[in-house]
Length: 449
Image (cartoon, rainbow, N blue to C red; front, side, top):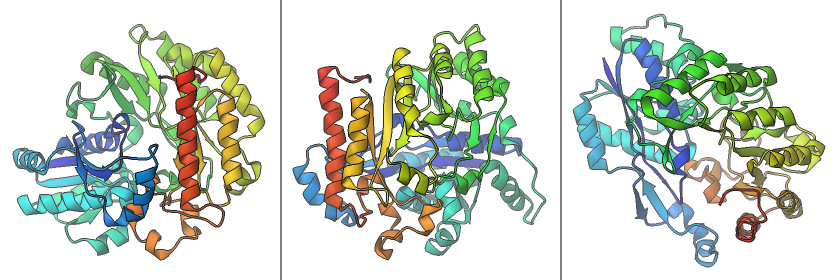
């Protein structure tokens, strides 16, 4: 059996190339290999070609803001290789089945287009998996006939039964695969294609899940409420293999809560520090780290192991809102964490949410100004509908928005609340971006250029 796994193109105002490593497909491919399947990966976002598109009707309400606000987005684009290249790769793969990653609700239209493209040029079953597929499986099955199967949950849990049913044309008890012992299939990606600056990078996952219960987080949709880690030795083997065989020098952890288990994280950092080959690697955690799990000694170990950039999830300074949404962490500790990180010369980015129900203009502005006063780069994150979260079920939005997956993105500024209208959301977003630029140009920010 031959399977082609595809990361589809996407359409949006912008994207961040260093966040597009197809990690989910790397793990899905590892699970398929365990099942004896021949597998290829096609990443339609590498190389990251972009082509301007007319502004879709769904976003016409943004047109006045785009025209008068220079700190917003300029154009709407299709990111990805051409359909002709996709069709050619499908034909060359001679695949028996095609699997498409469907992680983000906002980009499901690209998944649908790709499924239709596959069906037009190849008589093969198409299946999808990922976070969006897991949350909206039933609705996807109703919406489109181009997709033959919607797999839910992690790949190692959903793929065995699906593959065996296709292989034997009947239900077969699934094999049990442990994701912690899989060898992620980084070798299926084009060597040297994923770079930060002049260095090759790879993303990896050391642990899955998060025990915190933040109402706006959708981690539970894929991994439940628990957290589990691979052994430090297994993570180290993955890093070493990529270092030796792929010339990778930057390793990005996509964990949801990398430092929750302080003892485990220290063991991993100490193993990296002690490794004779890994003296000059760089480590990042671009998905963000939860600051209450950090302390000064841990920051010191992180710096020695190769971390130089620190991405922190702050959400809001308002203690009442944090309690309401079950967000951990007393804010009295935050300034001390930032001060300690600056002692170790970290470049610090801190993310705040703009537009969470219950937030006010004054509260968000206060949170931004507080962070700017600490000398960090502020990452303004406009709130959008979080599928699979606890908040999703109670969120007060019109059906026209709830039913339109295209609007499930930060760039849409789609969710207005009783306290914040769209103009205020965009004003706060622009304010944070403007102040960042001012601080960086004046040298007042402890962040990279």
